[in-house]
Length: 248
Image (cartoon, rainbow, N blue to C red; front, side, top):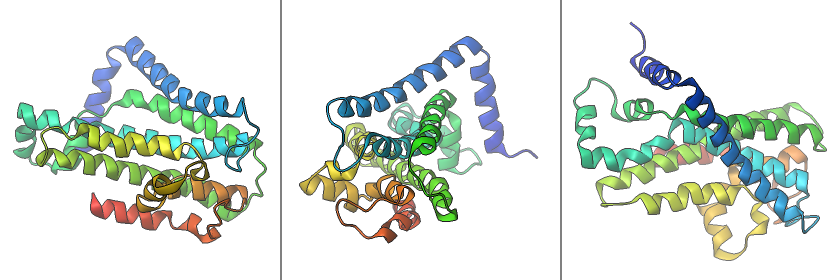
């Protein structure tokens, strides 16, 4: 018997593919939305040669790693944001009586495949940035390039699930959740050395956002941390992802 979750994803894809032109247009629009984040980074460097100790290429690497991680989480988990609607409309009751695990069922039920465009755009930016950056290639560098987006996807995905879970305690928790999910994305798009005070301490260290892209990018580039953090922090990402998964 086929895996029921894969079957549901297949059904979702076939339903979207019935309107091919709309589906392709949605993918292109979503890719364009992600491109705006890159344009924002370029706008900063239009008026300054460096940002918080980072050159344009170095900052783009941070942005690419963060963008790829968030886009992947948004594709796989982001639609869990609709949980408040499911609860209010009674749709969650239908899910509860079906012989499938609740969270996986919700995740595959309305997967927004048009968000693939965001992943493609972020992946292209990452490949281009890696090709022009001054990198001393090694096995550890390649491992970090592969590991960082996975860690970031788990962190952001966990935030989506935690934010949606507040639905059971608050009438409308959407804005609270968005401040950590989309706010966390915006935070990770830039080097954390560009921030200061409690804001940096909270998002970068308390929430672990610095481990999504900043510390891996430093290690990939072989660049010392402007904030004087130790090099081994780049390898703490899986631990942060594990902690967030446990909380979720």
